[in-house]
Length: 268
Image (cartoon, rainbow, N blue to C red; front, side, top):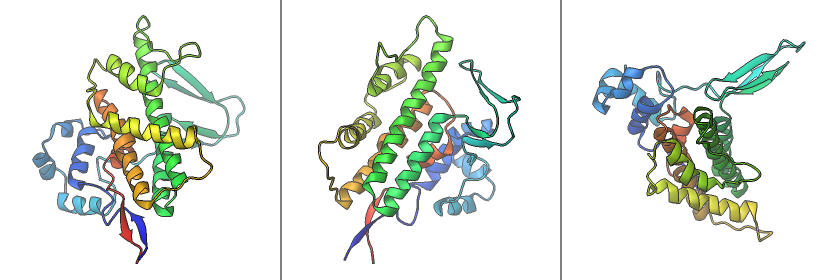
């Protein structure tokens, strides 16, 4: 009997704790709810039993799950009027003249493409889609750290962190050195995600960035392991970074961090 990759019947691991995490860390305006205990959450969310059933089925969590994406399309015919976009934390400014696309958080847009590729990898049993997911996922983490670095540099011009052509800083150096410095040394170097992040990055570098073979052979069980490593080594670290910086986290990241394990199932 043949096998196939599957997420199982529930797309979310521990749906109730996923809802609680959205309440605590999601991008919403119910600030008082962030202090709820899990029992208070059960009592205060209207029709909570139905919400839990819907969450198990893959539906969005009402009130607390922001489904608006980070990419917006604009119309118009140009003519010099333009749309001005300014980041108040860094004073960066961009202008779009005419129809185009605006990304308010580039790291989230990159993560959205990573998650889409992750799902395609499961559906198609595709190693190439996995590599796309991992590449975009790592890029999204680095983009997030770079965003925090730009904010840090704007506020600490005499204690800046820089990655320039003359002074290159590796991705893991940013995680190990920049993040604790910018976050008040709130990063636990022993966090499990650090090892998973290093492992998935090493795999990406070996297979996709510096390949030594023209052919890649991956068993379905190994592909499932790597897909689960995307969850623990990319989605969870990106969510944890938001916690470290005490910043509300986009729901797509929290949802990916709570993704059910990819497993092998009978193809039927």
